[in-house]
Amino acid sequence: MHNEAIAFPEAHAPARAELACAFRWAARLGLHETIANHFSLAVSEDGRRFLINPYGRHFSRIRARDLLLLDADDPSALERPDAPDITAWALHGALHRRHPRARCILHVHSKYATALACLADSRLPPIEQNAMRFFERVAIDEGFDGMGLGDEAERVSRQLGDKPILLMGNHGVLVAAPSVAQAFDDLYYFERACELYLTALATGRPLRIASDEVARKTARQWQDYPDFAQRHFAALQGILDEEEPDYRN
Image (cartoon, rainbow, N blue to C red):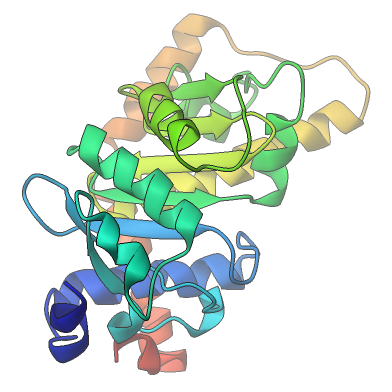
C-alpha cells in the first residue's frame, strides 16, 4: 500500500481532489484544529480501502497527492514511514470496516457541535430549518471513554448505526455520507444549526420549538431538495480552482 500511494499519487485523482477541497474549506470556515481531526473517503467497493490525511499536515495545506491510501484490514499502515495519526487509523479503519455505505467520513471538533456535545442534554431541538434538517438523523454517543483507539474506536463505530451524524459526547462530531459533497454539506449545516441553537439558548428566553410533524416534513424536504449538496460543493471547488488551485496537485 505504501509503494502504491507514493508511486501513483494520480490514482483516484477525482476523489483525492474532492477530499482535499473539503480539508481546505474546513480550514477556511474554522471547523478544524490545525493538524488534528481526520477526513477519509472510501475508494473500494467494500469501503475498506480509503484515503485519509497524513499526520502533521495542516488542513489548509493539504493537497490531493498528500492523501494516504490505506487498507482498513492492514495494521502495518502504522509502521510505514508516512504513518497516519494513530487515532485516525483506529477510528476511520473501524468505521470503514463496519459501514461500507459511509463512503466519506468527516470527523472534527468544531466549536458549536463540540459545545453541544458537552451539554448533559445534547439533543438538537427543531427550532429552525437547519436544525429540522437533522431531526431524527443524529445519533448521540454518551459513552466517551478516552481517545479513539482500540476498543474505543470499535465502540464508536457501533454508535453511528444508520444515522448520518454522530454527536460524540465530550468529544466532537462525525459525519458519514455517500459522497464528499453530501458529507461536507451535512457538516456545514449541522455546525450552523448548533451555532444557532446555542445562540438562542444564550438569550435565556423560551425557545420556539416546532412540532415533530413539522420537523419531519422539513427534514424530508431537505433530503428531497434537488442536487443541493452537489451544487454547494461544486461552488466550493470553483472558488478553490481560482484561489488555491494547488489543492488538486
